[in-house]
Length: 218
Length: 218
DNA sequence: GACGCAAGTAAACGATTGTTGACAAAGATC
DNA sequence: GATCTTTGTCAACAATCGTTTACTTGCGTC
Image (cartoon, rainbow over all chains, first blue to last red):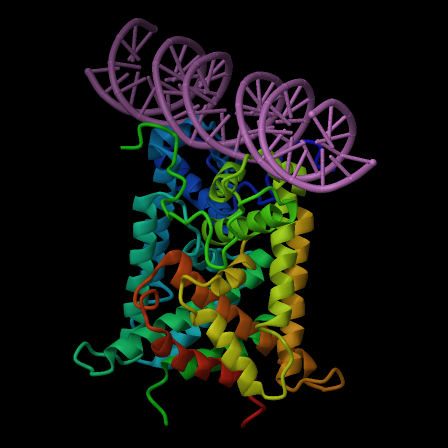
């Protein structure tokens, strides 16, 4: 085996278009733009930035490679578009403010354990992927730090709290846990977490997040 | 900017040889072999498999590229060597059996929060890196699953426990948390976890791991 | 001290990848 | 219905990367 340098571009067999019919029937620039971002986000999240080729993304959408450079200037530009797209969706979904801490935790858990055919875990997974490009990685870092503050605020943190630093750190540990679980479950496919049901996984994960985010016990 | 396709090979500036003088003075095959594995493990862990070039690794050691193919057949072979090396070290360090759960947790925490100049966190980080090669990724998955069982056993699990499945899952969540923290701290450099001191980080991390691994409360 | 083998180097090949500029087709505008 | 703009395609270029082959250098052996 491996008589050639070539490496199969991951036989992950992602369908060309997922849920929500982005069927790209006619010639609609905005639609194909969105379809490209969606396909790229999937590939980047599952295979990583470097392992993903622009030809693969274009092929997923059913479009010529050159369109990526036309719409996003470069591969890095496409990655940045994926990042800000994910950042927006996280703000309006997983990290949207709420009055109850338990509600925030519940929403985060749901994002993590979601069925693999949904895109939610991939949004989180993308936050772990480095592109090597300074701009894109700066956006990634800012998104994670913004996410941290949102989570800390949802856990009842206020900026004049004397323990604000410790609370921020605990919120980030909660994010780290979530990202680690998604990584092992989606990308590494490690047992038993990979094939654990949503309920089996939600229970201990909720316990951990509560231990980190719930108002100070002890 | 970005007038060229080229991307700077991550300005991480890893010194050619780290601690423990692997100074490669004379012509010693075994020594350069070890130096190559060490340098490769660093690069693979921090930059990822695809982003790491064999030329960079060889340059880190101060040796010609062709030696990699001579000693390890291929880049994938070098990656596999890194994997089994890390697997061995984890067995004899972070996951070595102990009579006290707290001692196991303490050792795992130390591996995670260790000063960035030590190699310990990188060993964990490598377990998250996919190569795209089937053999290497199989080794990676087996290492993680083996690590899970070791941790579960250290937490007082026995195979005839009726809750063995749940305990295995919790042990893997503990690993996921550790990996997530190392990722955010070492690779993504997200604040505040990136610049948190070892003590600041050890306290909440220990609490989480205890919540997952400590004998069943409630 | 010549010989032989192991350790290391140099240079090139083949394949892939991101990018680009010229060209073709489909809609809108008048 | 002719024309112009937008949307998409085709083909090629330049660079990089993993790998290989032939060559050189150093060390031990008889």
